Amino acid sequence: MKIICHGDSLTEGSDIERAYTWSAIVEHNLRLPVLNNGIGGDTTAGMLSRLSYDVVQQQPHIVILMGGTNDLWWDLDMNLIQANLSAMVNQAKYHGIAPIVGLPLPFLIEKASAQEWRPPVKGYEHLFSQINQLVENLKTSADQWEVPILDFHSLFLDDQGTAKMSLYLEDGVHAAKAGHRAMGKYAAKVIRDVFHIA
Image (cartoon, rainbow, N blue to C red):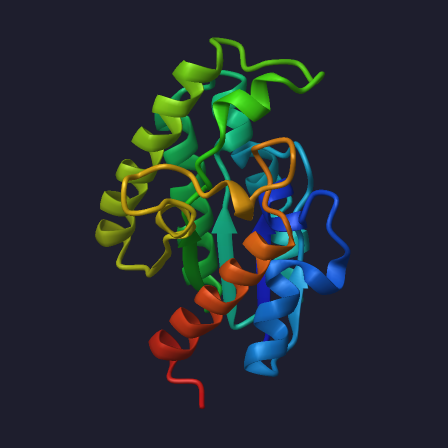
């Protein structure tokens, strides 16, 4: 059995050595090959365009799809994100690959806004609310698509619904090693339970 993780920098593991990324931790926990096809800055349209080469031709048993944060950063339409993810889910199923949808991380507005990168088109507050909306939409869509989810979003929130600072890099957007460790352990458990992996 082989797993491919297909996404953006949240999958790639921005500024994290490969051995400490959540995909590597899944590989270690499940003792199965896990390929990380995350590309920093990628949108769901980019993920869809490379799905055939990066996923289908590699013939994995499972693909974890997680994207949308960069789309929302550029204020792309929410329906477009869901359409792209729906197309990826359907293509994966058609080729006998079991899709799982990963829910994007929340972020720390204060830390993110202090960075020197180009800010979101409509600002951080708008992006924050849009990510929350995308998460809710994807929960509903995944149910309709009859595919499991990896709720990384909730994993990064405390009981008061505040993002756990200790799980992030200084940029407030990407997971630190502790965040990747939490994601990897959680993802491995869900995959083990859903696919009955010993």
